[in-house]
Structures are given as C-alpha cells and as structure tokens.
Image 1 (cartoon, rainbow, N blue to C red):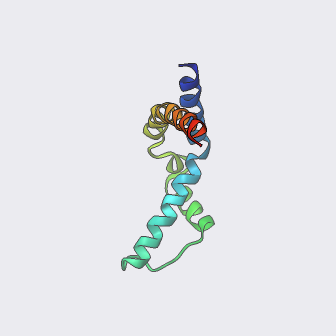
Image 2 (image 1 turned 90 degrees about the horizontal axis):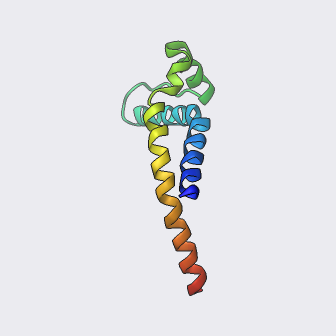
Amino acid sequence: KARMLCAAMAGMICWASIYPFDVLQNQTYRQALEVDGGGDHTHRTTWQLARQMYNQGGVPAFFRGFGITVLRAGPVAAAVLPVYDRSLEWLTETI
C-alpha cells in the first residue's frame, strides 16, 4: 500500500509540474486541426500561442482543468503500478 501511495503522489506531482506545457501542446494540436479543417488559417509558433494564451487569460489560462487532471492522476498511477509489478514478475519468471 505504501508503494501505491507513493505512485499516486508521484503521478500527481508529475502532472502538476508539466501541466502548463500539456495545455500549450493541446492548443498547438487544436490549431493544427483548425487550419486543416478550414478554420483560422494563421499558423502560430508555440511561443506565439503561449503569448496569445497569456494575453487572453493570464496565468490561469495555462491551468484550466488542472484540478481534475491532478486528482485523476493519483488513482491512475496507483492502479498502474501493481499491474506493472505483476507483469514484470510474470515476465521475469517466464523468460
């Protein structure tokens, strides 16, 4: 149980540390879909998108959906660790 708790905390800390970059990456993907889908045909660099997001929403623009994502990360990481451990154990015995 201690390992699962550590995994949950590690997952939450990991997501908390990279979340603004993930939001920016998603905006980049969204922009590509809009350009391909006939929307705004202006392609912006990552820095331009970051500046635009900041100008439109400030720092909170980079943390939209942060709470639910971090809360989800804990149980997911805690559930994945035992599966990884059992898989590694099985593969070690089998191979």
